[in-house]
Image (cartoon, rainbow, N blue to C red; front, side, top):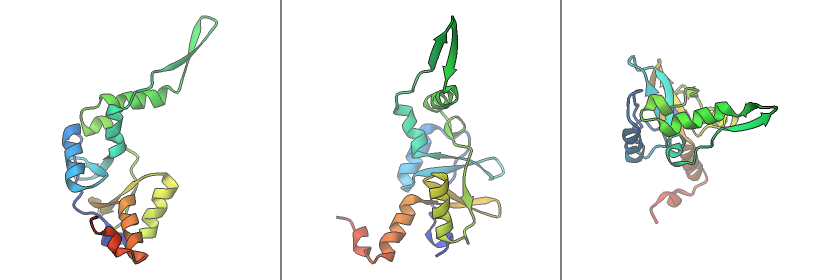
Length: 158
């Protein structure tokens, strides 16, 4: 099966200036776990996922320092700076992940799954001719597995 047959094309895209509240509503409304961020020309520049939004309510870790001979040595400042940036962010630009993995819609679903496993990501953006056309998430692949295993009735509401 190719990615085009499985992708969610109703996910929509957001801009750098989309607010955190608007992003949360969009994800919930569309039942997706992430929204691709595009620039003014419609090119993919990042992604905001549910994980990026959850940071808003997480306890941010303060800087860790080691004091030696009257001086201080900071530890893990990059991670803490990143957490702080996301926790205080108000727009997509503030909280988005810029390392985004994308795939062509005519690629095999197994290729998308391989990206997810190898890169430890939960969503891959589908790009055709430089434009975002959809997303494929872990949930989409799990749904496919249920169908492939003949457990179609497992998708019915309880």
